Image (cartoon, rainbow, N blue to C red):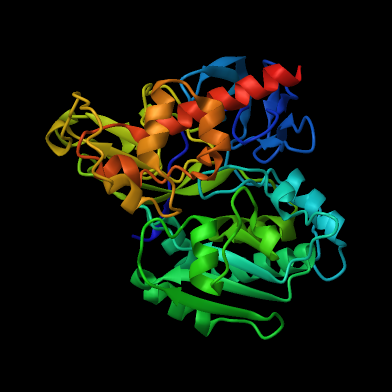
Amino acid sequence: MPIRQFPFATELIIPMTQHIGAPAEIAVREGQEVARGQVIAKATGYVSVPIHSPISGVVTQIGYVPTISGSKAQGVTIKAFPSSGQEVAEGYCIDYKTATADEILQAIQDAGIVGLGGAAFPTHVKLKVPEGKVCDYLIINGIECELFLTTDHRVMLEQGEDIYMGIRYLMKVTGAKAAIIGIEGNKQDAADHLNKMKPDDIPVSVKVVPVKYPQGSEKMLITAVLGKEVPSGGLPIDVNIVTVNIATTAEMGRLLPHGRGIQERVITISGPAVKKKGNYLIPIGTPLRFVLDHVGIVDDDIAEIYMGGPMMGPAVADLDISITKGTSGILVFGSKDVNHTDKIYPCIKCGACVDACPISLNPSKLGILAKFESYDKMVTDFNLMDCFECGSCSYVCPSHIPLVQYFRLSKSRYKRKQALNQN
């Protein structure tokens, strides 16, 4: 469905932990008036980005707010001015023709741009090609293989000019010789649209690949598009490639020419329990309760809510959380739509999870090691860190073992243990 503007809530709650890396540092005080697009939190390091006010209003509270992770984080609550038109002021334009690569990277950080596919990794960090490495190809990820989600599909159909402008910035930054937009075959209309408006000044092509989950993972996409395989523990740049999500690319092309920061994003709101399904342009910080009240819930029946897709998106445990930069979708299911299976049975060694794993790991063995908290062995002997948590193993397991949840927890505990050992 076409992208529609979502109404502004009277109060927006903006958490500081909206990206991977160091949280932003609050730069406003209670009672202060702020304009839409104004920086309200500054980056606290290289792997960090600022946060811009999604509305014009007054800061009513600074304190801890709930987040999707279940923990609380520092946040800013802003009450909107009821009579404001919510315009965003023009900033300093970054011209891709004259700006240096470092100036563009700095502008991307200043705009608060992160990966909008869900990872929310600071984009300027990802784009910095390490010394001694070279980027031959820039791959724009328009796969969007998760069920229900259609935000990238609509962005490709409605923001083609922004996408190509973003590619110009990306090619200047990475030094790529060519760009490829990867799109799955079920979005042929988007591929045709982007092909028709392809500019002559940049070497870019559109490649349609077969529909296959989880092809949206950058490693899977690289193999599908170029036939290259990223080595275990490696990054795309190790095979001379940089990948960027299509919505992130469009956001660059939309914001940088105007010197603005990100204050909103396109989100798919869907699921059997939603009345007004659609793709909406929603201000960052919009409370989930406000969103659900606006779209309406069938019979007021909510059994499960996911932020993102049903395979990789985390389940919501608190309706008081708000929309963040990494929120690509909100899926709502009623009790009749969900088959609750609380009973977990022992592994029967059927090998279904091994067959399903797209990168040939052994989820069964990893699950057993997770049960015994053998995190070091999971990483060193069974390549746990290569898992990108697609959820295929959990989906096919006849014993209902929540394998991908085990792996997420194991990664977290392993990283915490490594950090403690370093200190």
